[in-house]
Length: 115
Length: 115
Image 1 (cartoon, rainbow over the protein chains, first blue to last red):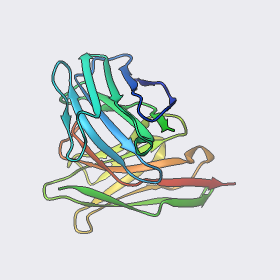
Image 2 (image 1 turned 60 degrees about the vertical axis):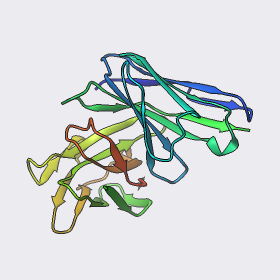
Image 3 (image 1 turned 135 degrees about the horizontal axis):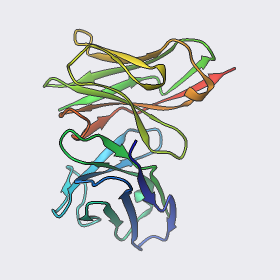
Image 4 (image 1 turned 135 degrees about the vertical axis):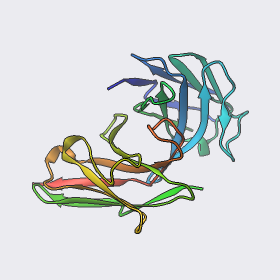
Protein backbone atom coordinates (compact mmCIF):
# COMPACT_ATOMS: atom_id res chain seq x y z
CA UNK A 1 0.00 0.00 0.00
CA UNK A 2 0.86 3.64 -0.19
CA UNK A 3 3.21 5.12 2.36
CA UNK A 4 2.72 8.21 4.43
CA UNK A 5 5.55 9.43 6.60
CA UNK A 6 5.65 11.87 9.49
CA UNK A 7 8.57 13.80 10.84
CA UNK A 8 9.61 13.92 13.55
CA UNK A 9 8.36 10.77 15.21
CA UNK A 10 8.94 12.30 18.64
CA UNK A 11 9.52 15.87 19.73
CA UNK A 12 9.94 17.56 23.06
CA UNK A 13 9.60 21.30 23.27
CA UNK A 14 9.40 23.94 25.94
CA UNK A 15 6.18 25.68 26.81
CA UNK A 16 5.66 28.78 24.70
CA UNK A 17 7.63 27.61 21.70
CA UNK A 18 6.28 26.42 18.35
CA UNK A 19 6.81 23.06 16.75
CA UNK A 20 6.24 21.91 13.19
CA UNK A 21 5.20 18.40 12.18
CA UNK A 22 5.50 17.25 8.59
CA UNK A 23 3.31 14.74 6.80
CA UNK A 24 4.42 13.42 3.44
CA UNK A 25 2.84 11.08 0.94
CA UNK A 26 5.78 9.20 -0.51
CA UNK A 27 4.39 7.50 -3.59
CA UNK A 28 1.15 9.24 -4.50
CA UNK A 29 -0.32 12.68 -4.79
CA UNK A 30 -2.46 13.55 -1.82
CA UNK A 31 -5.15 16.03 -2.71
CA UNK A 32 -6.60 15.76 0.78
CA UNK A 33 -4.84 15.34 4.09
CA UNK A 34 -6.35 14.95 7.51
CA UNK A 35 -4.83 15.72 10.89
CA UNK A 36 -5.88 13.76 13.96
CA UNK A 37 -5.01 13.98 17.61
CA UNK A 38 -4.98 11.05 20.00
CA UNK A 39 -4.84 11.29 23.77
CA UNK A 40 -3.82 8.23 25.76
CA UNK A 41 -6.47 5.54 25.74
CA UNK A 42 -8.78 7.72 23.67
CA UNK A 43 -10.00 7.85 20.10
CA UNK A 44 -8.30 9.59 17.27
CA UNK A 45 -10.04 12.95 17.03
CA UNK A 46 -10.13 14.73 13.71
CA UNK A 47 -8.64 18.20 13.98
CA UNK A 48 -8.76 19.47 10.43
CA UNK A 49 -9.02 18.62 6.77
CA UNK A 50 -6.72 20.22 4.27
CA UNK A 51 -6.92 20.26 0.51
CA UNK A 52 -3.90 21.13 -1.55
CA UNK A 53 -3.75 24.82 -2.27
CA UNK A 54 -6.71 25.68 -0.04
CA UNK A 55 -7.16 26.78 3.53
CA UNK A 56 -7.71 23.98 6.00
CA UNK A 57 -11.15 23.26 7.40
CA UNK A 58 -11.04 22.92 11.16
CA UNK A 59 -13.34 20.84 13.31
CA UNK A 60 -15.42 22.54 15.95
CA UNK A 61 -13.40 23.39 19.01
CA UNK A 62 -10.01 23.31 17.27
CA UNK A 63 -8.19 26.65 17.38
CA UNK A 64 -7.07 27.44 13.88
CA UNK A 65 -4.65 30.12 15.08
CA UNK A 66 -2.97 27.64 17.38
CA UNK A 67 -2.79 24.70 15.01
CA UNK A 68 -1.59 26.09 11.70
CA UNK A 69 -1.96 23.74 8.78
CA UNK A 70 -0.31 24.24 5.42
CA UNK A 71 -0.87 21.96 2.43
CA UNK A 72 1.28 23.68 -0.12
CA UNK A 73 2.02 20.72 -2.32
CA UNK A 74 0.44 17.43 -3.31
CA UNK A 75 2.90 15.50 -1.18
CA UNK A 76 3.39 17.63 1.90
CA UNK A 77 1.23 19.01 4.66
CA UNK A 78 2.54 20.60 7.83
CA UNK A 79 0.97 21.13 11.23
CA UNK A 80 2.51 23.85 13.37
CA UNK A 81 1.58 23.97 17.03
CA UNK A 82 2.13 27.57 18.04
CA UNK A 83 2.88 28.72 21.59
CA UNK A 84 2.68 25.15 22.78
CA UNK A 85 1.46 24.35 26.29
CA UNK A 86 1.66 21.12 28.26
CA UNK A 87 -1.98 20.36 27.47
CA UNK A 88 -1.01 20.20 23.79
CA UNK A 89 1.07 17.13 24.54
CA UNK A 90 -0.46 14.36 22.49
CA UNK A 91 -0.03 11.95 19.62
CA UNK A 92 -0.64 13.64 16.28
CA UNK A 93 -1.48 11.49 13.27
CA UNK A 94 -1.93 12.55 9.69
CA UNK A 95 -3.59 10.73 6.84
CA UNK A 96 -3.56 11.34 3.14
CA UNK A 97 -5.95 10.55 0.34
CA UNK A 98 -5.75 10.91 -3.38
CA UNK A 99 -9.33 12.13 -3.36
CA UNK A 100 -12.54 10.62 -4.67
CA UNK A 101 -12.36 6.84 -4.80
CA UNK A 102 -8.94 7.00 -3.19
CA UNK A 103 -7.96 5.17 -0.07
CA UNK A 104 -6.95 7.09 3.03
CA UNK A 105 -3.47 6.19 4.26
CA UNK A 106 -2.22 6.98 7.72
CA UNK A 107 1.16 8.14 8.92
CA UNK A 108 2.89 6.58 11.94
CA UNK A 109 2.19 9.54 14.17
CA UNK A 110 4.24 12.12 16.04
CA UNK A 111 4.49 12.13 19.82
CA UNK A 112 4.62 15.72 21.08
CA UNK A 113 5.63 16.43 24.65
CA UNK A 114 5.54 20.01 25.91
CA UNK A 115 7.47 20.65 29.10
CA UNK B 1 -23.85 12.96 13.88
CA UNK B 2 -21.97 9.71 13.69
CA UNK B 3 -20.09 7.81 16.35
CA UNK B 4 -18.73 4.38 17.13
CA UNK B 5 -18.30 2.56 20.41
CA UNK B 6 -15.81 -0.21 20.87
CA UNK B 7 -16.59 -2.50 23.76
CA UNK B 8 -13.49 -3.49 25.67
CA UNK B 9 -10.28 -1.51 25.62
CA UNK B 10 -8.22 -4.66 26.07
CA UNK B 11 -8.80 -8.18 24.82
CA UNK B 12 -6.60 -11.14 25.60
CA UNK B 13 -6.87 -14.26 23.48
CA UNK B 14 -4.94 -17.50 23.29
CA UNK B 15 -3.10 -18.36 20.13
CA UNK B 16 -5.48 -20.34 17.93
CA UNK B 17 -8.60 -19.04 19.64
CA UNK B 18 -11.35 -16.91 18.17
CA UNK B 19 -10.79 -13.18 18.06
CA UNK B 20 -13.93 -11.09 18.51
CA UNK B 21 -13.78 -7.31 18.68
CA UNK B 22 -17.03 -5.45 19.15
CA UNK B 23 -18.06 -2.23 17.47
CA UNK B 24 -21.43 -0.50 17.59
CA UNK B 25 -22.22 2.57 15.58
CA UNK B 26 -24.63 5.45 15.61
CA UNK B 27 -25.48 7.20 12.40
CA UNK B 28 -28.38 9.19 11.01
CA UNK B 29 -27.46 8.22 7.45
CA UNK B 30 -26.36 4.91 5.94
CA UNK B 31 -22.94 4.41 7.45
CA UNK B 32 -19.67 3.46 5.91
CA UNK B 33 -17.73 1.40 8.41
CA UNK B 34 -14.07 0.51 8.64
CA UNK B 35 -11.68 -1.50 10.76
CA UNK B 36 -8.07 -0.41 11.05
CA UNK B 37 -5.12 -2.05 12.79
CA UNK B 38 -2.17 -0.22 14.29
CA UNK B 39 1.06 -2.01 15.08
CA UNK B 40 3.54 -0.34 17.41
CA UNK B 41 5.20 2.69 15.88
CA UNK B 42 3.35 2.26 12.60
CA UNK B 43 0.48 3.96 10.84
CA UNK B 44 -3.07 2.66 10.77
CA UNK B 45 -3.61 -0.06 8.20
CA UNK B 46 -6.99 -0.79 6.65
CA UNK B 47 -8.26 -4.27 7.50
CA UNK B 48 -11.64 -4.09 5.80
CA UNK B 49 -14.53 -1.79 5.05
CA UNK B 50 -18.28 -1.91 4.63
CA UNK B 51 -19.71 0.28 1.92
CA UNK B 52 -23.19 -1.27 1.53
CA UNK B 53 -22.28 -3.88 -1.07
CA UNK B 54 -22.30 -6.99 1.13
CA UNK B 55 -23.04 -7.35 4.82
CA UNK B 56 -20.26 -9.88 5.40
CA UNK B 57 -16.96 -8.29 4.57
CA UNK B 58 -13.70 -10.16 4.30
CA UNK B 59 -10.45 -8.36 4.89
CA UNK B 60 -6.77 -8.99 5.07
CA UNK B 61 -4.98 -11.38 7.42
CA UNK B 62 -8.04 -13.63 7.80
CA UNK B 63 -10.27 -11.02 9.43
CA UNK B 64 -13.90 -10.49 8.57
CA UNK B 65 -16.74 -8.36 9.87
CA UNK B 66 -20.50 -8.50 9.57
CA UNK B 67 -22.71 -5.45 9.25
CA UNK B 68 -25.93 -5.89 11.21
CA UNK B 69 -28.25 -2.96 10.78
CA UNK B 70 -30.78 -4.24 13.32
CA UNK B 71 -28.08 -4.35 15.97
CA UNK B 72 -26.15 -1.32 14.67
CA UNK B 73 -23.04 -3.44 14.93
CA UNK B 74 -19.95 -4.17 12.88
CA UNK B 75 -18.01 -6.71 14.93
CA UNK B 76 -14.61 -7.94 13.76
CA UNK B 77 -13.70 -11.62 13.96
CA UNK B 78 -10.89 -13.97 13.13
CA UNK B 79 -11.31 -17.72 13.65
CA UNK B 80 -7.80 -18.42 14.87
CA UNK B 81 -5.53 -15.86 16.48
CA UNK B 82 -1.86 -15.64 15.59
CA UNK B 83 0.84 -14.01 17.65
CA UNK B 84 1.21 -11.46 14.88
CA UNK B 85 -2.34 -10.25 15.51
CA UNK B 86 -1.23 -8.49 18.67
CA UNK B 87 -1.94 -4.83 17.93
CA UNK B 88 -4.46 -2.07 18.49
CA UNK B 89 -7.66 -2.17 16.46
CA UNK B 90 -9.86 0.77 15.62
CA UNK B 91 -13.39 0.82 14.32
CA UNK B 92 -14.38 3.92 12.36
CA UNK B 93 -17.44 5.38 10.67
CA UNK B 94 -17.41 7.77 7.76
CA UNK B 95 -20.01 9.80 5.98
CA UNK B 96 -18.48 8.91 2.65
CA UNK B 97 -17.41 5.64 1.06
CA UNK B 98 -13.97 4.59 -0.05
CA UNK B 99 -12.39 5.88 3.15
CA UNK B 100 -11.70 9.35 1.86
CA UNK B 101 -14.25 11.08 4.00
CA UNK B 102 -13.91 12.26 7.56
CA UNK B 103 -13.68 9.49 10.09
CA UNK B 104 -15.06 9.15 13.58
CA UNK B 105 -12.95 6.58 15.38
CA UNK B 106 -13.70 4.35 18.31
CA UNK B 107 -11.41 4.39 21.32
CA UNK B 108 -9.56 1.33 20.14
CA UNK B 109 -9.12 -2.21 21.44
CA UNK B 110 -5.69 -3.52 22.36
CA UNK B 111 -5.36 -7.20 21.49
CA UNK B 112 -2.90 -9.37 23.36
CA UNK B 113 -2.24 -12.89 22.09
CA UNK B 114 -0.90 -15.41 24.57
CA UNK B 115 0.92 -18.61 23.61
